[in-house]
Image (cartoon, rainbow, N blue to C red; front, side):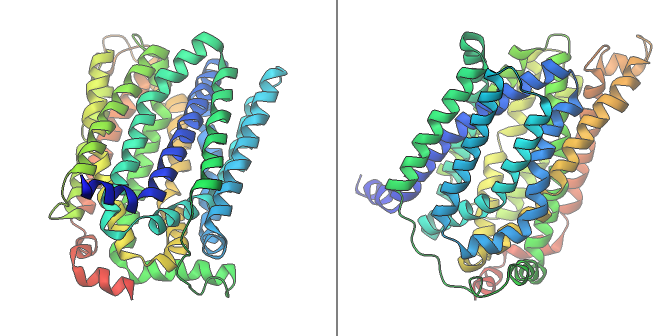
Length: 439
């Protein structure tokens, strides 16, 4: 009991930030879910819906490498408060346009792009804030708790958003999002005190020079760099999946909003169990092996269940197998990053990481929407009912996305097997590497 009280005291600031920001993230996720459903029902196009995420990530990827320098210079708390306030104003704009009956898909593209631009400075600031609030010995526990929150959000978002949409419409979803913002904003403003970050050169040097420092650090830490490139390759496959996923489940026979919600809920439940395990389990003997093996499991299971499955239970089983181990991957990845990158450099290095690791996300979203609408759905529509492809992946709308999931499973598994043999990544297990990075 005493050790538990000590733990709570040591993590008090982190726990307040974690709880309130997670509550706000739930509101934002519910709004995003509602707008994706609104967009697909209004346009009927996977590409149109995927472009919502492209517009969010494109400015984020392009500007992140410079934003890290600003994050290291500026007050982390002020950056987070300003960024969250701007996101809330964008949500208010959506609500006003909806109320006036004037909301168009291009409005959402513009607002998502502005939000993505603000996230370029908000995300590195938030990452450094976690390091400042969390003792190093609790990094894995903190990462597990963050995964736990993300899991609950994934599980609760479709249930809450679908219920609110059915009972009160999209306006109620957006109002709930704004309520969660105010709760998180006031808690961060009054209850969370961030320790001062270690002094570094970022404050005295130009933004371009600081951006180069982040890239130079990664060039010197080849294991971290190769791990980031591995994740960039996985992100491309995962985001093609994300773009095709709602299109298939909303249009496939036996699918619809209820099916989309059920599979998302199963995903959340799997992530919840995995997050609990990540928080409770002792450190693994090899964090690199944990990252590689969990990603291999994810890539080689769910895609095939989605490809060959014809019912909600099968799709849900695939979601559980594909996502249950992801929190373990995230926790071990987080510890590897934080222990190999000094806190004084984390803003710049995390920003450089964001550009290199996430540049494939808008490419994946765009490619996924384009492949579904222009390649695989037309291909399957031309197949005769008794053809091999139709026997394997079904007929009608959604069968093209199923074929795409099969190919994604092959690509994802191959990517994991290739990078699993990378000696630079395995060198991160050497304790001397972490000590050298911290000097």
